[in-house]
Image (cartoon, rainbow, N blue to C red; front, side, top):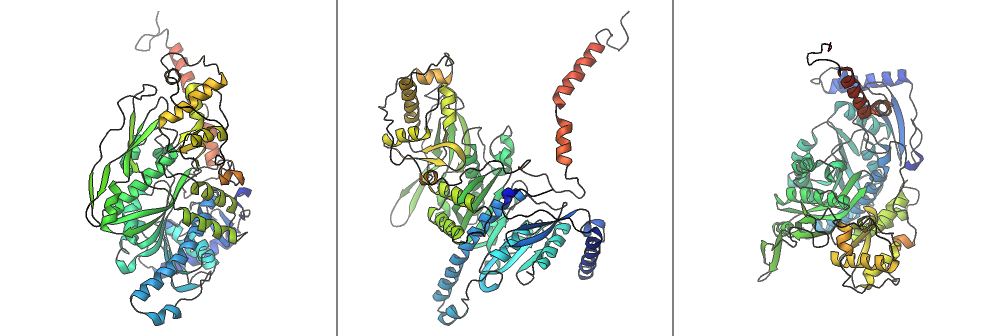
Length: 582
């Protein structure tokens, strides 16, 4: 198997001589058992020498057995994480200086503030925890590419994976910087929740949801520390026929909608904030990204009882119309200032909508609760973009990082978005150019932007009535035939109402965002075949197992129907007991 060219600086996998691998692994196992005499001496206690491949990504080169999970498509995930932590390392050094100045340790401020160097342990550098390390590629890249690191703990619960991590640490000469750990990720974080033991950065990149680790993670990161979270259970978060699963995992009910990817980000943030607020902590999102088949979130975690209470103010529900796609958000709490720095919190008034949609008459669906605050820190993302551009050739996915963060930085803080194709499908009309509809919104006096989570998106603070007036004016001016809008359909009801707004379709100078004008790489095509979420790692597997299983299951339902019809035709001339009718 070859890694895709899309993965930038990844090079082809190289199969190793099996005799050399067996010999090396035997020595590793022997040393491991000598250091850990109480460990189980079973076949699973050492890495099985089946199929090993060499993977090169960034400055790291590791050996990768098929029994340990690895997905080359997530190089973008690893690249952008390195960029964020590299910028955070600079903030961390300033944080250490401020703390020492407060303690009047002026002599040690300049003595111990060594220059940030890649691959060298910094006395006041970052302590990083990778909770689910798998092969250790991410931690090895951290050690080789992030300056200002004091120590990296690469943990995995699986013994095989822990041995592979140690092997890759030795291979890249990072014994002084990276430490392999074999423990339960949650227990490891709980053991380091004391103030003096907390990590500066905690990175969680599990297979599926990261919810089981949230409670421990918000306690194990220091005040002002960085928490990086990946969730790959997009089908659950986007409400794909299993809303009850999302509720049991995240405590929120999703709705099947066009804005499902942004809502998924807000559901994760609300769940994360709910765990943090229990310990008088709160989160500040730096970037919340919907990428391919997964969600990647970077937040800072702070301690403060008063600000933790504000989580009620930016938590709310959404009323969504499945007929026309209209939506409106409803905060759960209202905040009013009192004397001094005090605030009064009260339950919000509502609901903002009636039982049925005023535009098409369909019944509303309720989703949430979800996070309603800003998803990104524009200033921090600009710093990350500058860091990526300042080191050309370092990141294999640099163009996509620049494009996605630039587009995310242009987004409005208004929750959720319209998908423009859905507007036209509702009324069955021909589409207009993106510049035209965005100009119409801007000319009406409202703000508008794209969303990084959807290609043909419209993010605006304009009310639903303005959006539908623009569509009505477009249909009227274009003299479009609407034969498919029969009475009783949402499109018929919407077009039967005359527009109450005088719409101006003249091109607005701000209708084209900078990321689009500069032709940045914002949305990338599928990088390779079968590029989505990989199956869980197996002890003994075949690279072609997924392809073979897919071929076997093709037409499965059709075969069942055919077999059922044949059985019924064969039993047509039989009695209930199976005997033939005479």
